[in-house]
Length: 459
Image (cartoon, rainbow, N blue to C red; front, side, top):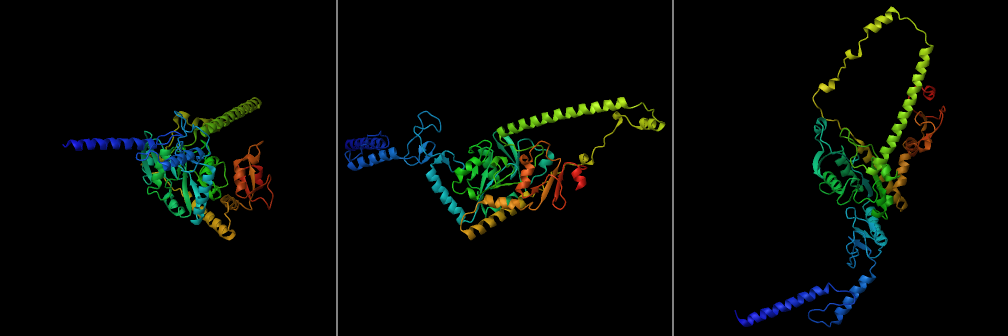
């Protein structure tokens, strides 16, 4: 090799190393320092540029933050060695607007701008927003082995592995038909207490081509509350809450919102409820159930003691009456308890048949949602203002029992305020009126706990 070429190559390598080191220095400098460019270390233009970058970092309001890093200036806001959310300075960005990326937060101003644009897009497409629950609404999931009668029903039944366990999910009848038709009128979102992996797995089963939900899946990991779902509404829809409807089997998780459409829980697997029901709420409910059970046990014991006292008094007052020959014969003919035979039903001797799954609740829900959509846009076109779906749902609900006057007999326990009872609240929401006594010509419905009461006989 020519020595001159060797010397030139070494010189080139040195120049490249200097350029590389200078290039690296451009991205790592402290405030007040400026990087030296490779060719012109005294460039005034680069000095102004560096000052602008430092000034931008100092004056940045940090309105967009992802994983504690500003999306505008690129500053790392996390305390060195700290956890997520531990920042070096207070920031105004605290609203998470993307379902599955809770680490991305924006300020109120940015959220309002994005929300206004989303609001316009929804109205331009002539759609509304529908938040769908999963468990016992669109699907029923079990984390135990299938029973023979359940395994025989193979339609829309899926098994899969999650978290090291085997799960089985049954899709509610008419769900695919429902999603296909409602997707034309509503922007669909999933909101569930299931964990993120579970929620996206079910979304994949319901929407394998990502036509209906896309990324709009909100799981327990993104919810702000462990027992309520309503806390995320303001963040997700800062300008469009009046367009939002919910479809769920539980009204309490939405804090009994007027925008909620409640439907009958879907249960396919025997002896299995909602496997993703909030634990905190379950503990509270179990405590209340225990209290009610204890109260019932105490009441039952008191009733038994009273009955024993009455029987004892009757036996003391009763005279000894000799048995007749007929009574003796009847006693002799009666078989002993040990000799009694129990005839088993014929169904147990038959081969295993699949469980019947004739649920059609979504057929009626589809009709209601179409009616709400129609009323909304008729009013929007007529008045030029955005109506509130809550008012439409409340009005439709009040028409169901309109004109009915209801009397309860033995339904509400003595000493309990009827206004606090759920059945009273439901009937009132559906437009019914109540009376304490039956009035001829006015009372139209009597709801009685048992036959033979004074109200039932009078009615």
